[in-house]
Length: 116
Length: 112
Image 1 (cartoon, each protein chain N blue to C red):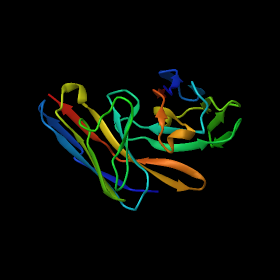
Image 2: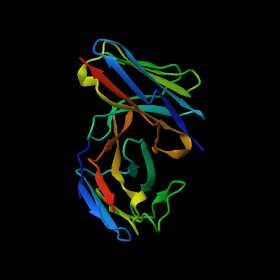
Image 3: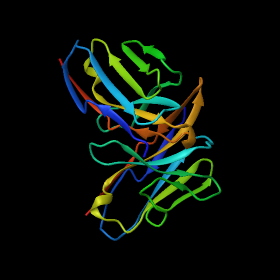
């Protein structure tokens, strides 16, 4: 299994500002993802964070709004830029762990973001 | 696009009753995974199904993967209050690597 920490755990921000969320893993992992979960909703994949190259974004998400860094195999950041109240959500990073034939995803505790 | 539908959205049962949640994909999946999220927590992996028609059991939980690899179900026998949470199915498509498309989840409430 993988132990994942995220910083900050929560934040309240003003519209128009930006917030960078950090994700730290206790072991080297190849696959790392960023998800968004709006209150009471499901998880939506934002992007795959690729080490040493640009992130791969899902439909509806763009690099200018959600720039991602992945400097090494244990760390990634997601920035929510020029925030609006619609960006209020929980942001989770996840990594893939392969064990026992399963490629399960381990999720971080999430960052709860409120935009005023 | 590739969507994973899940029903019901909510389920309220008395402790001891059974519970089932269903998941359906518009396209064939390479595998399907199930996660449980407790209130205020993050999703935790339960199982992965890969083979057509596969059935797996974990104590009171039974997971099935359809023959066409487009649908799946999770059945809990004799629910307990500790089963409370939201159960998500998440489908993986062959061309998306390990990226998952999550269903909307089924929130289970169990009252004693």
